[in-house]
Image (cartoon, rainbow, N blue to C red; front, side, top):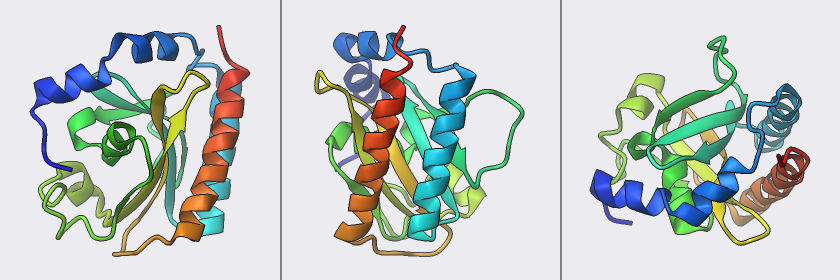
Amino acid sequence: MTAMTNTELFDRLGEPGRMQRLAGYDLFHPGLRTDLDRIASHSAGRLHAPVSMVSILLDSAQLVIGRHGLPDTGTEIDGTPAEWSLCTQTVLAGRAYRVTDNTTDPLHADNPVLAMAGLRSYAGVPLIDDSGHVLGAHCVVDVTPRHFSEAEIAVLDEGAADVMRALRQHLV
């Protein structure tokens, strides 16, 4: 993928149909957060990764709505700008996205979030709703360079299916 301007990024992520679908979920329900944290923990354990997340991408921000291995900030949901989120690339691609070593990856080498956190590798799969909209991503992140296999992507796909089942229980 090539780098996009922020305007192009926000236009693609802010597509009205996708945003309407996101608005249909109670993303702040405490029961949902508990379920998604459990799914993230399960994926991290199966893939021996220190960090796993479930994120939703809005037009300009990534919201982390489930997590394992990230510090608790004391808020219900954490977020980062969409242009710094690796999950943004997963959402835009609509398929699995991998980064073996972000420090040598031309698209991510200058990412301040990854540099501050010391994160090096990423594998994420899209969260696709029943209407075909890509709402977010389920991912794992590691502190060392790592190649993620197809079998490991399949584990993330299983987790993403569990995430979508949990989200469907929280339609408003």
